[in-house]
Structures are given as C-alpha cells and as structure tokens.
Length: 314
Image (spheres, helix red, strand yellow):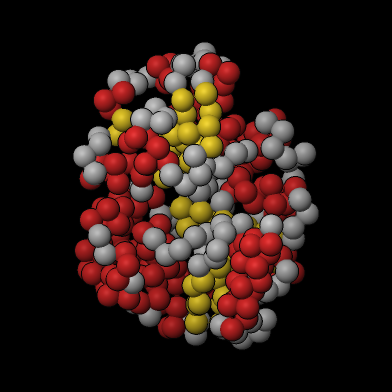
C-alpha cells in the first residue's frame, strides 16, 4: 500500500513538473500505460505537427499504474486521460466526475488467446482447462459470457491470476489460454516467438462490443475549446498513419528507440486497422448496451444516464 501511494505521489509530482494545464493550450495527457504501438496516432499527430498547427502542446505522460490517469483527471491534476470503456463505467459508478469525449480505439482489443498446439479449436474445448487473466472484473465477465455462449460454465474451467505474465505462463504450460491480452500485441509476440496462436474474439462470442481506448476529461471542463482542436489533430494523425505506416514507424523509433524491435513493429502495423477513423464520434447504442450489460453482470450498481458521462465535442 505504501509503495502504491508513493507511486501515485511521484506521478502527481511528474505531471505537475510538466506544467498543470488549467488554462492555455497545453494539454497534459496521462496514457493508459507506457508508450506502445496502440498510441501510434498520438505519436504521429505530434511528429507531423498537427497538434502544433492548432496551437496545442500535448504532453504524453506514462503512469505507474493504468488506473492513475482518470484519478488525476478527476482531481484536476491532469487535463485528459486515456482509459478503457469498461473501467470508465466502474469509475463513474464510484463517483468520479469523468466524461468520455472520444476514442483512440473504438473496437475491442481484448481477446482470448491459446496456442494452436493445444488443439483448442472451439471455445467448448476450454472445458477443464486452466485459463489465466491479468485483472479481475471485466476479464471474468468476458470469459463467463464467452463460455456460456457455447454452453460451458465458468466453473468448468480453472481461472487463475497470472499478473502481466500472460505470454510466459502460456508458453510454459502453466495455463492453456488467457484473457486480457490485446489482439494487436500478445498473439503477434507469440507468433514471432515461434508459438503460433489461436485467437477467439469476445464480440463474436456473445460479449457486447465496446471501445478499448477512450479519452476522458473532468466533467467541469467538457466545454473547453482545446478538445475540438485535439480531436481534429488526432484524426489527421490517424489518416497520415494509415497512408504512411512504414514512414511513421521509422520516425517513431527515432523518438522512442525503446520501441524498436520486431514485435513492436508488427504490432504497430497490425494496430492501424483498429484506430478510430473519427475519434470524436459517439455510438450511443453501443454505449447504452454495454452499460446495461455491466449492470446485469453486477460490475456496476446501475447503468448511468448516457448524457452524464459522454459528450460530443463541438
């Protein structure tokens, strides 16, 4: 607990050292994790000068924990955070004053992964198997829904927490499948490591579709004029990335050399199909359906009114 508090304090100090953006055209954006290929449009929008053209200076900050960003935004210690639609609904349920303004990835990335040599050709074949996960809550509901869609109960499998060692646990044989992996990351890493993967998609197996990566701001700052500029620049970043994937990758690894390895390059290219073509758009039906599903799974007490936690940028 002490380490966790110290990490949060360190992140607060770091974000403040970059300059708190209460006014002006600086934007402090807390990412969901360290820089990785799923952030490609943000990197491209910065490198191509799209943010600068609109008078914006966007500061990308990696958190020590994926849950830190929304908390900092709620506390007015950061302008914007990148988080996940399921987590946002749980944060709203906890009373955090957050509003979703747009998306970076408007489809699910989470998936269920196994190895081809396990000969799990159908979700029914998971019965009696050990399945790993990295976080509870939504992963549990996802697996339960996918299994039930094929007449298998959650009690028919052994569901174990392996932290962030999903790939290693699978390769070592400690588990026969895992949830919580991203379809543009872990399956690619497995394939490049000589372990061909088999992927099952939740939205094709009874689980409602949702947005994987979304941008949230404090409810008190929804009308800030910076947001329309931000999402316009981000859309340009997506368009440029789509048209120039290799060139964008080469520029990215010059600025972020830690990304320069075969698996990240493959993930960079594979991620392009998932980025929101119109980041400021809102699919109201998708959001309402997913909120009602979260309520039915008792992950939240009540599906909130859509207008209370989403807004359109003008």
